[in-house]
Image (cartoon, rainbow, N blue to C red; front, side, top):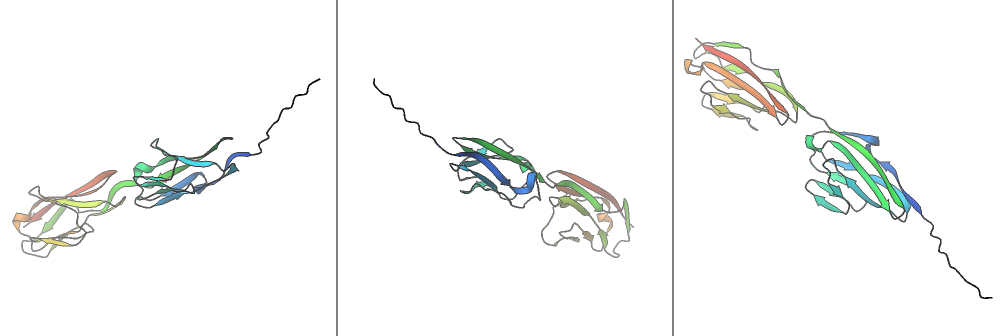
Length: 209
């Protein structure tokens, strides 16, 4: 009688398994800061790592897309985080033996501006007298930009360095100083603090007598 021989190849391997992910499930970052998400996975054969971003974009090979970069070791880099980068980031480890995934939530800490020290509703000054100081201090993340609207409806935008315009002095913190005010300076002064999440404003009426 004849004989038949069958050869079986037994492949030994281990399905992918993500062992560690940055942040333990939750990370907080400030606007403008950088962020690095590390994803450590095991398995045999060595799994291929990819990232799914909150926007739905998937990075599956080492590359740079805008402010995002996927490194050869599977780490994801984000440069200059903004509030639009918040959401769930998923790391995926894949091989022919299976798929493993793990997610981390990224919170970008931000809030709209709030003027904490603004001008009084009415300000009084003598003509040609002492300088008038109109304060406009605000809190907000990202940092709020301060601008002033003058009685003639013109605007003094925020500045990075102190500036003197006519008899008006404006500093980067939003302080407006009117030197030797006259009756032509009388009227409404409105300060506005603004960032990408919103704005806050305060108005004072300057009486010059």
